[in-house]
Amino acid sequence: MPRILPQVLRNLLRKPATVKYPQVRVEPPKGYRGRPVVDPERCISCWLCIRTCPARAITISKETKKPSIWLGRCIFCGECAEVCPARAITMTKEFEFTTLR
Amino acid sequence: MTFIVPIGPQHPALKEPAFFRFEVKGEEIADVDIRFGYVHRGIEEALQRRDYKHDVYLIERICGICNVVHTTTYCQAIEQLAGVEPPERAKYIRVIILELERIHSHLLWLGIAAHQIGFNTLFMLAWRDRERVMDLREIISGNRVTSATNTIGGVRRDVKPEHVPTILRGLDELEHSTKYYIDLFNSDRTILARCTNVGILTKDDARKFCAVGPLARASGVDTDIRRDHPYAIYDKLSFNVITEREGDVWAKSMVRLREILEAIHIVRQAVKEMPIGPIRIKVNLEIPRNEAIERTEAPRGELFYYALSNGTDSPERVHVRTPTCANFASIKRMFLGGTVAEIPIVIWSIDPCFACNDRVALVDSHTGKTFNLSLKELRKWRH
Ligand code: SF4
Ligand code: SF4
Image (cartoon, rainbow over all chains, first blue to last red; front, side, top):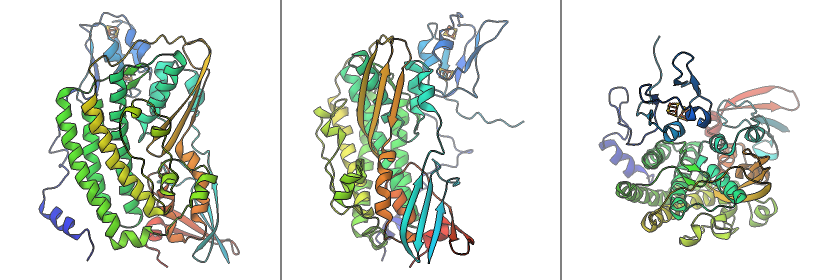
């Protein structure tokens, strides 16, 4: 008899180890590095985040002089949130970026 | 009659395109030829064009599975260049995430190895347990895979006291299941039949071809950078260097499985003994001309970094040698005399940083006719 059989039988009776993702969502833990969001109200336009970003994902809007993050380049390192003196950038728990168009 | 069996270079499932050309006589492998370089990304050149801090994130992307060990080695090399020493607590945190990474890498390896020998139940079980490590890493570093925790002069994130019970609980569960896998590898007939006396690398050959990491240790070569050339705080922790004598695929699996237990042991000690204090120091990154080498023990073996600074804030040269590169020299010896059915597991037994294979073509060297064969069929190919 294969040695793994008892384990297999036990797993048949257990509830699944996975969750049915789109219906059931697992909340990411605290401190998760999801989508960085800029709060233009708090931003003091020091542009430190632009120099810190290793992926050069942050660009400046010409009119408002506030940074905006290009998610196509962002690598979710969280350096910008760490460096911002006004705490205008936060890493949210958002990780689903796919959209339907 | 000799057949040529080419695998790669554009192999849909190879993480790194590599080309294997097997010459087979009937079932037996008579010769193997390996070619690399298809996935040259120019990272070393790109490193010279960024500054030291930005390089950390590029280095992290050399390898997804072992990203922490890459950044740790790089940061240690740069710290050596700048002549600074990271704070004690940072070193402990580095060791914790390094060892969690080793556990996850070995469990990933175990899953794919089980898949390669057609044991998909074990594959599922190993990957289920791997999720536990991924969850721990997510708690500590904020992401499942890329940790972005290391930085020059320390670490960016602290292991908070409230995380410690979760980590310890996760480790207990992992220890339990790893012991079960060790038991399984010692007794299951399928595993023993597919793994023992397959892909043998003798001790002499392991030395001669400069094998590193679990591959060398499975052949009885007692080498481990963590003990021989301690970095971070490995000199303050007690752990055993796991060796096996047989040198076959079974021994390689056993070394990795037992290393998981050692890694769990190391994390437990590190979590317990972690001192309180700062986690990073400020480093002046205009480093005068200097050079440094740094070696660490990655999950796959010795990882080597060379860094040269030139007075500006970007390096003059950073050179990386990954363990897989060192281990490919021994692969020929492991194949010779083996059979075609062994190819997937023997390639995978050196943990070569590629996910899984699914197609090979058999070329009859006399008629030039090509047969295509999916690796699924290859896995079923018995002699
Ligand atoms: S670092 Fe903060 S305050 Fe400065 S520009 Fe960026 S978001 Fe604005
Ligand atoms: S998270 Fe990192 S990559 Fe993304 S915008 Fe901030 S600094 Fe740039």
